[in-house]
Amino acid sequence: MESMQIDVLVNGGGVAGATAAYALARQGYKVALVEQTDGNKILNGADLLKPSGRDVLADYGLLDAVLAGGGRKRSQVKIFHDGDYVTEVDYTQHGDLGYFVLIPYEKSRKIILDQLAELPNALVYFNSRIVESHFEGDTLARVVLNSGVELRPRVAIGAEGNGSYLRKELGIEVERTVYDQKMFLGKYPMVPSVEEKNRLYVDHKGGLAYFYPIGTSHYRLVIGFPQEEAKALLADASGAALKARLTEFVSESDDALAQVGDTAIFDGIPIARMHAPSYYKGNTVLIGNAIHAIHPITGQGMNLALEDVGVLVPALKAFLDGDQGIEETLRHYQESRYEVNEKVVSYGHRLATTYHQRDAFAGSIDHKIQGSGRDADAMRVLQSLPG
Image 1 (cartoon, rainbow, N blue to C red):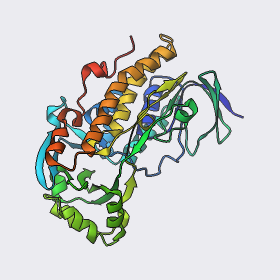
Image 2 (image 1 turned 135 degrees about the vertical axis):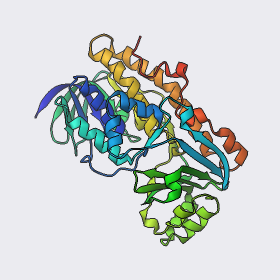
Image 3 (image 1 turned 180 degrees about the vertical axis):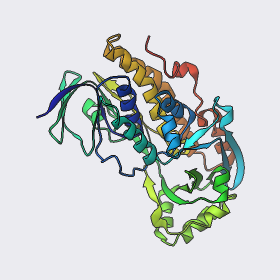
Image 4 (image 1 turned 180 degrees about the horizontal axis):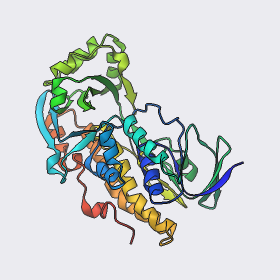
């Protein structure tokens, strides 16, 4: 059996896990990333990098690669209720750079994984999973992969999403509330209305439609409806029922609606609310969807995960360099992130449960949070070091 000592084990190769592995390996630590897929599989994830998540990629030298790989800059999102204009979120008002980035999740993930693979002190295990984990007290001493490789980490990061293996191994129980609304992603050739501006529509019956570009040649249509209605609409393979329903509340995107047809193009995405009560135990720490799930109407899922990375990486540096103990290091991370994550998860829930009435929905929109503005005191400075 091959066995090796490493500084950091990252379990899960989504955008957050890959970014954490890259940021730590780039600083000279020996990092192993374990990913169940081959790294090329298309995953349903967020296509949106809000400013604070975007800035984490910039801090670790990854943003230029993402932009060069087809990332699309945008500054405004126009929001409607029952077809009537409600408000416009203007990102130029929330940060010096004044833009967010749109890029297919699988593309940004692949770009970061490719950058990681170029680092000499990074080990990437695709098509791999942990089959054994051995603890000494609360400390994860070693793991064995399905290939038989044994890894002995100083610290482990769980970045495996909602079904986190390491979270379960730590015994951290979470309550996950599934929304009745079901959401689906479709992809279409670009049309002028989407080229012009992002538009988000909701209606009083729980419908949602969001049109936004992914690159220069295509756009994404995200739809959401209560479970039984979604099932009925998508059962009409011609798309006629879906198009008729969307026409009830989509008011400025006729050219995009004209393309709605075969419903087989739509892939479902999980919609739930979750926030773990604890982010760590011993030398194992969790990030991203392993600790929180948020309604996608906020566009904050990947953003929160990258913010977790932005706080955790410099904190771990203090531990790995011998300047601070693991308990103090991981406690700092949780205290820095918990209040912000809770606030944004609750914000998403508020938005998702006020479609029924225009004033309630409009009153729930927080431009600063939607634009990824954060309370400086709650954040305790996004990338500050412990102490």
